[in-house]
Length: 64
Ligand SMILES: [Zn+2]
Image 1 (cartoon, rainbow, N blue to C red):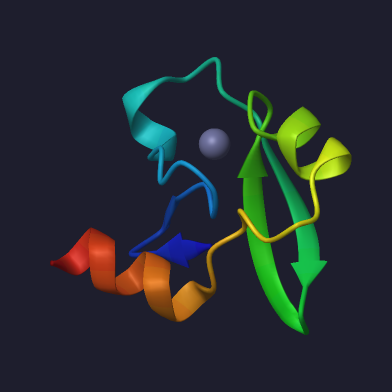
Image 2 (image 1 turned 120 degrees about the vertical axis):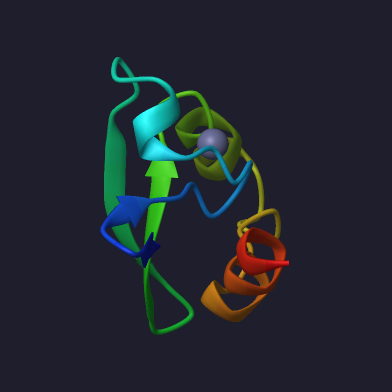
């Protein structure tokens, strides 16, 4: 998801400006616009999707 113009992975919470080689894939999960970094994409595809955090959860963890 996007917070303050930075992208955060909805799975591992990796921040876009920490590693410029990371590419974020946009997707829709449970009706929300989410972002998944490339290293988490396989886990999401092969998993049930339950590892994807909701935007509310991500925001809570990122902002503390
Ligand atoms: Zn990730």
